[in-house]
Image (cartoon, one colour):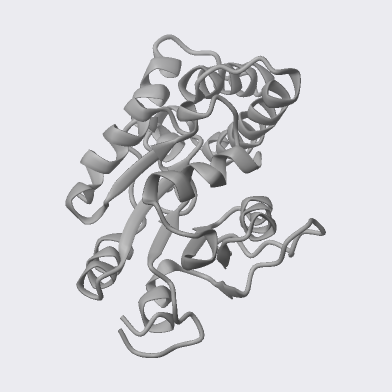
Length: 228
């Protein structure tokens, strides 16, 4: 691997939803029923999904991400007046097979050819992550799929980032963490990982502890930054 500003990186660890997998593809797959409400549903569903994960963590009332995702979907469907027979089941099933962003397979292939360890570190429950990885056909390009279920709390708790350190057996400073969520990128940086924020959605930088070292718009930009 060529010498770059990210010399010394031994592993690239990726957030899953919004970073590797497009959470909007579930509602998009039901556009025949949802019509113009697909985008509104995606936004509200995602917001409540994250809010519920944080609130459960604060209360010490953990439930896995599949349950949280369903509870958030119920809130969004009821709020938008979109309760329809079988729609909920259809959306939940689609969430298991979210589309990977188009650059993901080639990006991972280049990282593996460069000798880097690759892993997912996600709020997702193991069965959810396994289904998404299998659907995308990228399992052979990942060395580990790490779920917060191993520590029983959600990002951005430091226990989650420590899980990657423990399971990969390397120092935090040799891990490059990538997330499309600004709050996640900041938290990983504050923990001690090196971080690139994949700002797919053109968001403003967060005013939180930590600071990503670099910002990209898609993960297609990553291999060149690592000389891969």
